[in-house]
Image (spheres, rainbow, N blue to C red):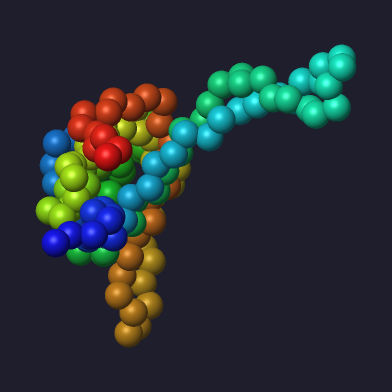
Length: 144
């Protein structure tokens, strides 16, 4: 018998691809859409309401330092004055869950590029913050 807790999706089963190439060293990804709102006061109401004015998209990929993937992906174009844009595919498919979720993040632009960051007796890691402008929901899990 399975319980509701068994259906909670675990990030252990998450996967990430950059431009169709699996990023095996990835151990975390977050991407979110932040709503931009302006306050609106209305006659006859004491509460201040909000008017939706747009949104900003940002995220972060967390990777173990195993290779030079990010340097190879960004260096040449950055040095030419070109802002590299990539597609990031996020997939979460826990076998105990009621389904899988896949989100394609479009037009991702990384905020920085780490050239070197290491310390004795510590595992190497890379945080790669990014912004983006659009996304597609490829697979979703319906509530039950």
